[in-house]
Length: 187
Image (cartoon, one colour):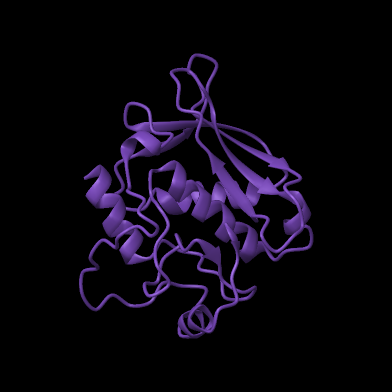
């Protein structure tokens, strides 16, 4: 996920109340993926209806916030800590991924083989000094990928935009369109 500063993104983000979801007026419909991608259970970290996670990250607040947010009423996939008798499906970790404009704030790495661990990676270089909301946005977005969601177009309010909104305009809840895509994928 890269930083975005397009006028459309700024205008869309400027219309949002950033600390709470907008009021629901009508049931949101699922939004299509961009770039020919598709949402698929096979690209997720979900194993038998759950994601077992471990962490090796300094961003514990963001990890805990994202997990809690994605466990909203009606969510089907349980995101629970790994234990001594289970295999982890997902690890949260930190890495230096670069500081260029094209370098991501974070990323989801799917490894896909049986017993393999997928990763949510926070870019320490780009998140150094970032606001709590920005880091939480990155965790929410990347956990969305771990749940199988793809990138969405700029014309819908979604956590799953390919590029992150400008600092100060982060979405820190699960928008209805993302819940609709989640429900379409997981029931």
